[in-house]
Image (cartoon, rainbow, N blue to C red; front, side):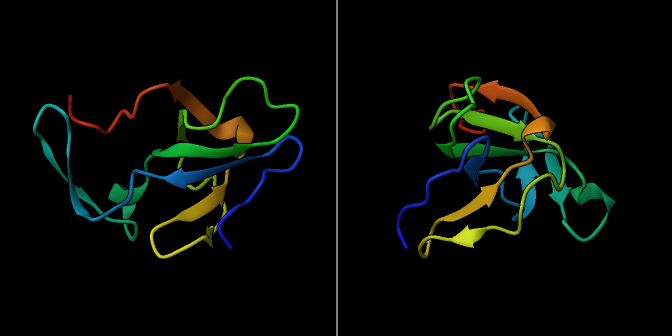
Length: 103
C-alpha cells in the first residue's frame, strides 16, 4: 500500500513531531519527551498527506499542529511512513513551512 486518499471532510497526515526520548527547542532547551507520562501530553505537528473534499482551509504538504491525542492509531504505508486520520476540529495551527526544521 503506497497511496491513501482522504474521504470527504477528512484529513490524513504524517506525524513529524515524533517522540524520541529527548527533544530540543529552537532556543536550545532540552525537554524530556515521554508518551507514557504527563510530559508527553502536548500537541504534535503533522505534514498533511491528503485532504478530502469540503476541506478548503488546508492543503497537502502544509503542516498542522494538532491537540494531544486527536488522531487515529495510524496506518503504515511503508517502512518509513505512517499516516494518521486527524480530528479536524482539534487542529490548532497551520504552517506552510516545517516548524521543526532548523533555519
